[in-house]
Every structure is written in C-alpha cells, then in structure tokens.
Image (cartoon, rainbow, N blue to C red; front, side):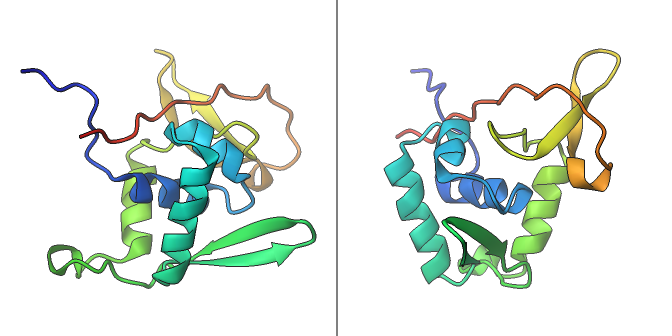
Length: 141
C-alpha cells in the first residue's frame, strides 16, 4: 500500500516556520500555505504560545508573532535542538516558501528553482512582482 500524503514535519512545525519567516503574517495566509483551515492554525498558534515557543503581541488590530529562538523542543530526543536552530535549518534548506500576502520574495536561479526567501525590508524599496504561494501538504494518517 502506497501512502503519498505524509510529510516529515508536523503541522505545528510548519506553522512555526511560517511565523518565523514573517512575524506579521495573517493566520489566513499561514493556513493557505500549510494546507490547513484557519481554525486549525489558530489552535496550533495557541498551542505554540502556551508551550512558550512563541509570543503573540497585539499591534493595533493585528498580531505580531515573536518566535522564542532560545527555547528547546520538549521531546527528549529533540531536547538538544533550539527553536531558532530548527527554524534556521529549515529556512537555509529552502523549505520555507513565501506566503500569500507575506512581505518576502524569493530569487529564482537560472534553472527556475527558488534559492530561498529574502526579506524585502533587507533589500530596500526595490519593486518585484509578488511570488506565488507554495502549498505545503499537511500530515495525514
């Protein structure tokens, strides 16, 4: 029996990476990127906040998410890994793609593959077309 719908990272990990990539992202955009409902993402964000892995700050009518990079994962097999180390590994490997509505852009190499996100704020006010959002399939089973 072939099972194609699974991914190595949990939905919690995928949401965490999205929040780290863009702290001002709308949860609607995270849901679209990860392939979950907005309500599921809200519950996951609540879990991450309660576990102390992120902090939600209210900025006007929006939320700003601070990933607590020095926190360690809870499971004994992962206890030596910090949240920041994990996020850096995933982003460095190019697994994080820009979110719809996110303030990030990716460079395309000569063969058309993405080389990873660049923050527009780090590059000044250069104008580029908005990248297409990538879809990350949620875990199944």
